[in-house]
Amino acid sequence: MLGFIAARQAGLDDPARLRRAEATRRVLSLELNKDRDVERIHGSGINTLDIEPVEGRYMLSGGSDGVIVLYDLENFSKKPCYTCKAVCSVGRSHPDVHRFSVETVQWYPHDTGMFTSSSFDKTLKIWDTNTLQPADVFHFEGTVYSHHMSPVATKHCLIAVGTKSPKVQLCDLKSGSCSHILQGHRQEVLAVSWSPRHEYILATASADGRVKLWDVRRASGCLTTLDQHNGEKSKASSEAANTAHSGRVNGLCYTNDGLHLLTVGTDDRMRLWNSSTGENTLVNYGKVCNESRKGLKFTISCGCNPEFAFVPYGSTIAVYTIFSGELITMLRGHYNTVDCCVFQPNFQELYSGSKDCNILAWIPALREPVPDDISEKSLSQQHLNPAYEDAWSSSEDEG
Image (cartoon, rainbow, N blue to C red; front, side, top):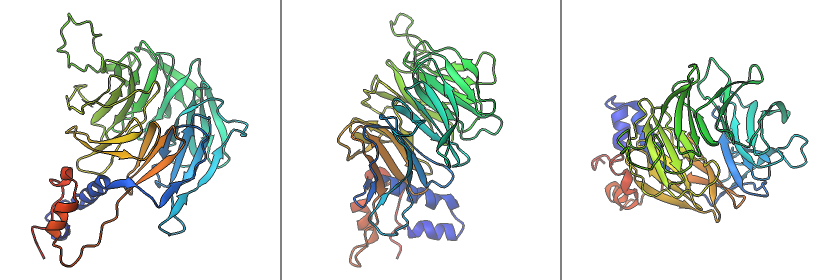
């Protein structure tokens, strides 16, 4: 640690290196925090979570009961033991509450004054946060599994929507209508995600085993269909051509730089793709248990080296290094299936929602004070995760 600070002070190191190293250390020490609770509001399972990117302070949750809750994660009491309180909620008594399970909630990327929700009641609702009233409602013919707004778009206000129909719907917030449709999938679309690098690039995942990348400006739309075999599969095989997974693909997430795309499927596999070429990088994550019939909401760290993926795995959350495929740890605390998790990059915290109706907070462990008679080197050997040893070093016995 002292070595990082000295190198930064002398101008020998990239200033961001210390920040990345400390962020990585904090992620590797994530544990269920005994002093922080999230107020329990939902009466049934929690399907989706989202933390607003402006301040990183407010979190939305959506449940199987159709209820949406807005939490304040800030600790105003300044006491070590506190509960994240619900600021407000769209409860069962609200006149505009979703009638069935809420599958996705998302904050408007540039302002906390608006958020969106989609549900099995075949609607996508645009909410005014201040009044907690819907500003607009989009209706669809089938169940809505997923929706997403681009985090970087400046020239469009499109919301991509995946429904029971194989057609991907694009809803325009400016006009209040479904502007156009992307056709190419053969079964329901379970997950959608805009690229954080290019505002017109969209990834969609379907129950037909396919993942497609689209440029929504193009008339033909589809740029490429991801192939798990990179085009080398024997034509004699009975397996469908150009499939990303050998089962339903129910989760996808871009890395924060937009250069890679992670997908998960019911074939119990997770795959990492080069988002520019569409190539399967062939990183082996082993078996990634996935029995969800709906969309699976997993997340990726931000600002670490290496970056990590947090994937619901039964009643636990599996933490993988993205580019090596190594399983670092399993976060245990829920007593029923975990359906979603979200990463808070400002403080390297993780929040997870489960069918047990609880939202759990996973917080970096505090550094233990170093006794005078123990050297820094021996302490690092005792307490550091083995996966971290290459990225974090002491100051070569300085001091």
